[in-house]
Image (cartoon, rainbow over all chains, first blue to last red):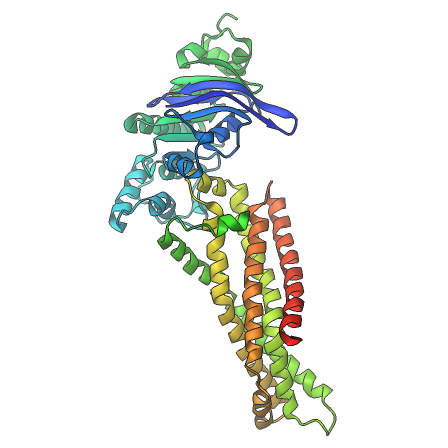
Length: 252
Length: 236
């Protein structure tokens, strides 16, 4: 479980995260949603330590991450898997080498054991037999799946996904969503997904935080979100005519 | 601060060693063709120019070989070849690390708990410091060989005069000076280029700017340190 308490972040004179608190539960797909530029990716980067919060607490199973020593932070980082928006696969390495990388760095497994683990992860993301391909040879969806395989290679306790569906067609998006949900439940991981994709929200939104102008504006789950009376959230969810027709417009 | 992280204790020696071997190939072996071509041609050119300049009957023709050896050993191979490598290797390092920065690959390393500066930069510095002396030694040999081929074939001097010239008044201490310069330049090229690449922010345009800055600053620093080391070794 990860808790964030009263975190704030300012870039130059612009406060992009304002006193945000939320709890991300283990074994559930926790979503941070909101419009582009609302601060959701910044919250994610604060949580994984890529940005430093001005104030507030980020608790990984009770341990306040920003206050830990570098060694203690490294111990937690080794339990983190992250799926970046663009995949962030290492260009100079094959798919197999990419997935094997965290195992090379942090385990003493034999070559055969590593290969077995790599193949297991690739099977999970439906990329069996693609071991020797380089990232440049993969499609957008395959890159996302490959990055997901790398993220889960070292049995993470926490999985962060930054807009896993961006740039993907709806069918592939659903595949990625389901993969993340299945992996979360199967391995009992605390998964945090940043997205603005309403399909994802409806498919896998177990625990949702809606961020508006850097603030935690609304919290709930996928069944509650469709009945919202919160104006900003309503405008976000029912931004398209299609959503209004498919889901039916609730009373404001 | 960046160098402190670069030289921090490696997290996994076997992975670092694998990277160093990869970089020896990437930085060193892949530079062989350009070094071979430039060295042979420059050796030939220096010999012809020397022979042309020595038109006094009072100066023996073995001076052609002597001048070629001194020019190549003291300045051409250690400094000029390193300037060329600053262009080739420096821009390669800056653009590679810069592209990794803008595509979040460095962030991915950091989140995994890996010292990205150490993992990405240290193997490049270690590989360059190891392989550059071999490349420059090869450059010296090929430069002198190129001078021999050109000098003898053009009739500027005889084979005997040239070989006598390259052996005349040889001071092994000057090799120490040359290779000290090479080690310093290897460190400058890799560390300066990696610094610019690592601190790239933005997009493809900024990667290009980092690459250009890496070559410019490396080249200026090479010339500056060449001057300083020459003053230290030759005059003292």
